[in-house]
Image 1 (cartoon, helix red, strand yellow):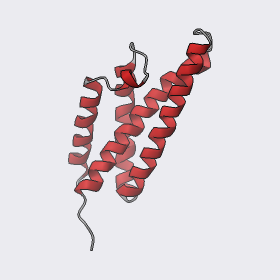
Image 2 (cartoon, rainbow, N blue to C red; image 1 turned 180 degrees about the vertical axis):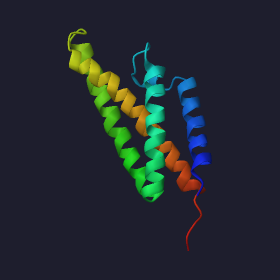
Image 3 (spheres, rainbow, N blue to C red; image 1 turned 90 degrees about the horizontal axis):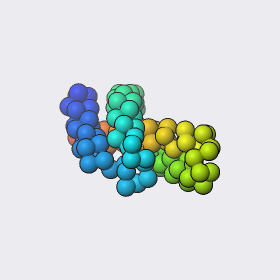
Image 4 (cartoon, one colour; image 1 turned 30 degrees about the vertical axis):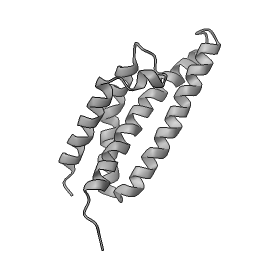
Length: 124
């Protein structure tokens, strides 16, 4: 399987996700909702390329789905604790911010490996 078209499709889909600002309604801060996804997307594309090359894409897809759920959980926990502390808890603020970067990275990796799974030839 050629990796460049798969990465290009993954980057295009993540570009649409960033453009429509999908992180804001899910709880990202309005000032850095797009920025956090833009930081995480290249990281996720690199990790997806490694996952596609070193293992079967389907196992990488399951790993990225699990990582997305964990990262989103950290981001939401950081958001609630930061708001509950009236913006005093710096650790919770970092968890919120870096949780969204990790969510963007794992989402980009999951989308890209999902595309690789869909485009991979079936083995009989």
